[in-house]
Length: 242
Image 1: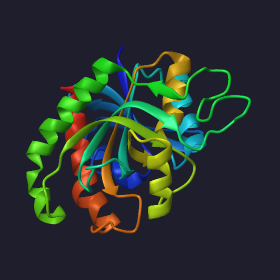
Image 2: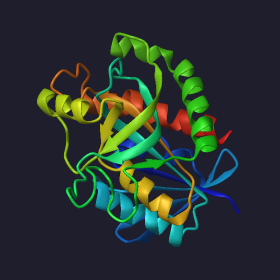
Image 3: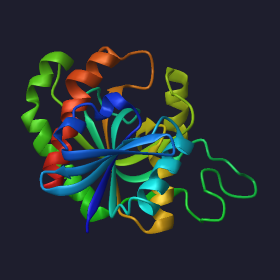
Image 4: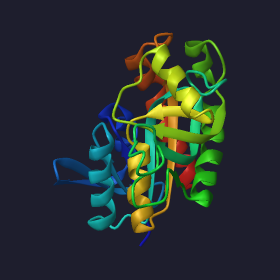
């Protein structure tokens, strides 16, 4: 059986998705509610991980070890830090890195000790399907331009994660200087990527850009979650699963 795990950090990011799961049953494990059922004819398990790398890693491990997830999709919002990455855009990860990992001088900065890796890969075929789904979903949600003041674009590249909410221009600039190719910053994806790497589980990560990780965001965060990120996330999942 192929079962796709759908994960988000916050309940608001799953709010549009959960009602679309057919025949859902809910199980509780490790302080989390796991929704099992079918979405578009595919077996899925959806769960709110909680915020931060440890919470995300616990959730990913449970999904693989107990719920036998065949592949994993992390979705939700992130801050845009790459040039040209605007509020309302979507970023699909090509790789994920922990920007706050630093065991130097014993190991190179950003490298996870004893793995030899700083950048954890995603599954290319699954990520390609998610990117195609995102392109189609953005076309369906072109009306969000009225809310955002511009159209939305798809980007692919590096997403970085850390246990710190990046919300100042100085922090964003520091990340750009340390990691010039980083497109977005959030708090979970790289931890999930490390777990998936350990288990050999295919992973894709897609993030809607809710702010510029500074004080310049021009759309209310709650409004963005409800009007843009939630419905867009559901559309991306539906398109990606086919």
